[in-house]
Image (cartoon, rainbow, N blue to C red):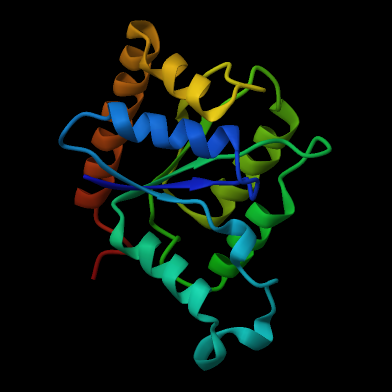
Length: 185
């Protein structure tokens, strides 16, 4: 199972990015997690840049999504909303087909952020028919340094929760991959 984990933060020492790296480190051996932490490097979305003019960074981002069996998104909340970098990354996906049938689940590194999560859930349910709204894990890691995030995720309780979450999402991705996509011919 190949999972692309997208950090919605552009911050160098992002708690969300650190959490995704820690989750990858404790993932079951049959689940490969690649981390995309480049939302801040994507150019601002413009329909004028789609098609042949698609910037290389965006092309690489879309290719990473296409190679994955599913996507996990972890994002901070900025002013009760989705960070601009993550929204911009999602905007690059809207007119393409790589995200339409891609399983997506959320992972959250804070005890708060419900307004952002509600908005993100609405957006994800709009861009893919495979948003796994019920597969969700919240770890209270806010304000921890990356090394502290790793230690917190590696505790027996959190490791167990992370592995159960990943196994549930992996099973969902597998079932989605076996489902017939589109109307019957």
